[in-house]
Image (cartoon, rainbow, N blue to C red; front, side, top):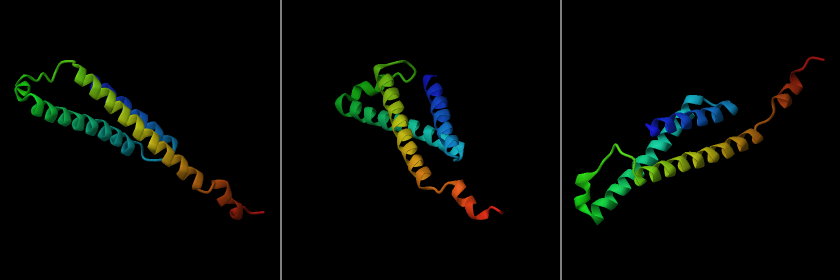
Length: 113
């Protein structure tokens, strides 16, 4: 349930960034969902492989529905990944915006005197 709230928050966070720079909101919202879920899957598979190598008998007793320290750590890592990618995109958009000529400059030659 907590993952759903995190996904909704990440979607809105990226959509606001896209809206601020005039990009398509849902594209970046889906990117946020992909980053979050990709990080969760990577961490889950990594932890599963680690458990399988170190203690193969523990794989029979996995509880996927409860809160555990592993779930909390994976949420924190996934949120950090979403936050990091957000700041990378923000820097990229700011650089693009600075390099793009202003609308006022484009209008200089078009005005009728």
